[in-house]
Image 1 (cartoon, helix red, strand yellow):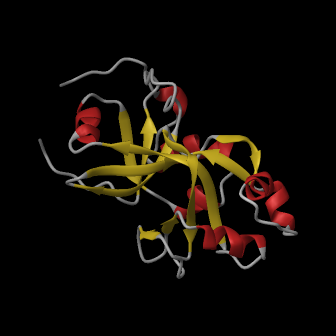
Image 2 (cartoon, rainbow, N blue to C red):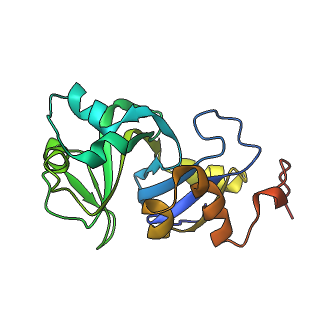
Length: 186
C-alpha cells in the first residue's frame, strides 16, 4: 500500500460514510506516520461551552470568551479527555507540534491560561479525538471513504463550525451537491 502523510490535511467524509462518528465531518489530521494517524473532528460543536468545561475541571474563569466558545466532539477515542488545537504553538507542558504554527495540547496549563485570558490567539477545544491504526486510514482512503486536502487555518479557526465541511470541500473546488453516495473505481 502506498505511503502517504496527511499531517496538516483535512479529511472530509464522503456522503456514503455510514459511521455516525464521522458522517459529514471535517477532521484535521494532527499526526500521520507509520504508527497510524491522529486527528480531531472540527465541525461538531457539542452542547457545552468552554466555561462549563472549565468549571467541571475546577478551573475558575471570568474570561468572556469562555462563555461563548463551544466545545467540540473531537472523535470517538478518549471522549472524556480534552484536546486543544491552537495557534500559535506556544510553550505548554504536553503539546504535539503539528506544524510551526499549530499545536495540539492535552495539558491543563493551556486551559488555565485561557481562563486567565492568556491563551493562544486561535483555538478549538475538543473532547475526544479520532485515531487510526497503522495502514487503517490508507485502507479507508482506498475505499473512497474520505476526500483529502491541505488544511487551511482560516477554515480551521475562523470559519463557523457549521460551514467548515462545505469550506473544506470548496478548497477542492467541490460543491456538496456534486457528491454522490456511490463510489466508483476506474
